[in-house]
Amino acid sequence: MKAPAFELSDHNGKRVSSADLLAQGRLVVCFIRGRWCPFCVGQMEAMNAITPQIEAAGAALVAISPQTEKQAYFMHDQHKLRFPLLVDTRNVVARQFGLVYRVPQEQQQLYRRTFVNLPFVNGDDSWELPIPASYVIAGDGTILHASANEDYRERPEPADILHVLSLTPN
Image (cartoon, rainbow, N blue to C red; front, top):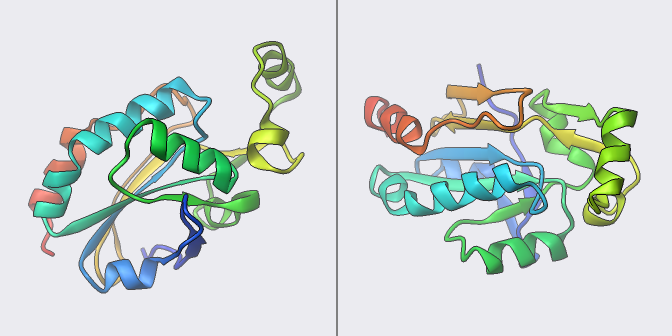
């Protein structure tokens, strides 16, 4: 199965295209909910720690979230991420991957009570988020590995991503 091609702005407003990244080798893509999610932050810090090994394996890493460019910049800067944090306005790319869901009403109320202002963070009032997911994509766009879980607390171990990279040709 082929991954949808995409072109998004990163945390600094620079355009990043999957075609350009895949022309250089494999690509690891992580879809996250945003900087307000402690599980997303933990995953990004863990992926940041293995970025040198991902690059040594001949792959690139990007994360994609629906948060605004300003929120992506804050997250990238605060956690000193060594990979692009791409802005997927209105979850256009996440939707192509089949990952988008609307936050249920009771969860919206919980978020409001805990000061998670999704309309502000994402720059729209859709209350839509991606299911957290990770993909390893071959240079020709073939999905080599996919991990998506509706339970936002469950994320793939960085070692599992490195293992997939060790088993698949560049």
